[in-house]
Length: 327
Image 1 (cartoon, rainbow, N blue to C red):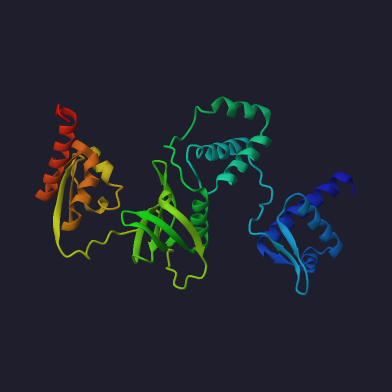
Image 2: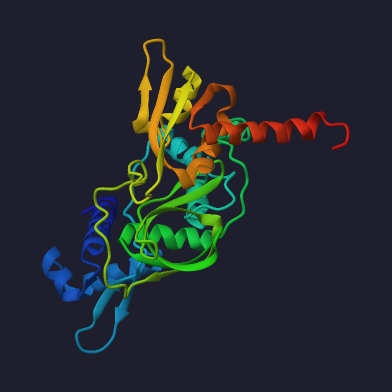
């Protein structure tokens, strides 16, 4: 058998070995030898070669020992086209304006690998596009470690104990994260809060401590929820309620149709405009009015009168700030 052919066969065997090990997680040399129809000596030599190139396996000594795979597995070689490699490179690069990401070091390592192995002309194309094709986000500072903890909990369906800063001060909570999403540079984590016994949205930069709680007894079944449909707002627990009526322009409709509080309550008109009708707690009038306020002239609150009066007070305050010579 020619040398090149032997090298090819061995390379294919090592790739197959990597795939089998990834699936098994723990194994013995004898198990692999029987599965591949090879001698234990050959398998041992193959494992040594994989270990030398960084494949994360380690030996377990003593009775019942063998080999185990570290927590972070390594994928077998994957063939990418040049365009696919460039696409992955820019997907990772698009995260560069975030203050932190849940996989900061991993993303940087992936970028380095893709760039390093690209042909020279592809590198030149990428270099010409640097700082010309970006996905910009406001830079926010937050802990990458806490983001990684939340991401790990999402993947393993775990509960996380956090210290969270809100209007009530800093509270310790056990939460079961549903997902992570970014908006305006901030990372948000919708989760079930066992302290409040309902679903809540947590802003990651307000978390000052986060640790996976593997011993938590009663986890929730979150299989049917995602960052797109994690909550159906429940306002029925409030005794006093009133009607919120808002007239919306086309732009107002577009602004509110993705809002979890309002989307189900918008009536569309033939001309593209809309009307928002919903029942809200009297105690939360200012809260809902503040959600409408950023739309400016694209949304006109008709009722309740308390919301209209609140808007007028906000306008008067701003008017005084800019037009009162004594201010």
